[in-house]
Image 1 (cartoon, rainbow, N blue to C red):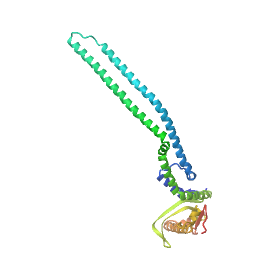
Image 2: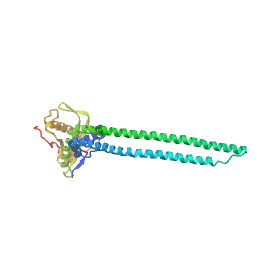
Image 3: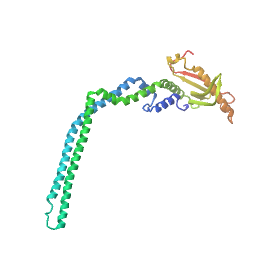
Image 4: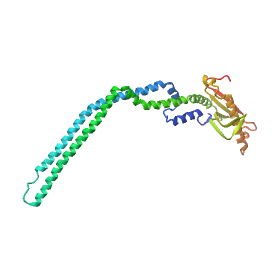
Length: 314
């Protein structure tokens, strides 16, 4: 099997754009294409999911409000019962105080004991009343909030669904816009993937380099066109030479678009740049690259343009 290096260029571009926009729920080109084909269904599913969420919230609130009414009254009764029990204990302590006698010191001691119990009795009533009042206030506030929410859902159900789904729909729109902008790149990746799958079947003495990129320190002059950098979809190194392969997954619209660079001009331009790279590397090498691999023969660079969809007349 052919040795393969690098991921195809269009896939790298797609992955970069998706990561940049915090989109991480696609694992293949098929998933991207499926998402593209089902925009309306995907959007409707988001709305349907939130419709169900709001419906479930409505049912939950109805049950919760009913249960809260009972629980609040039960809790208030428990607090009052606890207060009565504590007061009864203090009353019992007061009743069990020893009778006063004529001795001054014991009388003073009993006085302060009695006073302390009375203060505790008074303080306990205040604290317990405060706790009951605070609980009633908090419970009423919570109950009012839930009743208000239930009323809003009941009278403005669609608005509630819209607000609930807004964040997910916004995220969906960003995802949709990102993928729409990547449309050409996605179909370019499909074409490049087909070519790579085919080239992988070559023997192991073939080497495939995907997305070969090179930037020149000094731009090359090619018939008045200054080349600063090149990008080659597939660079195939074989015993019979080097194949420079450009993949085009063009639609009819792309063929008729005069703003697109001619694939023939593009590959000739890249061929010239690649020849200069190899010539420069060979001349600077301490051993003769061409002689080592091909003897005295020159290294042929052959151009191939692969169209995986529509073919232009050129």
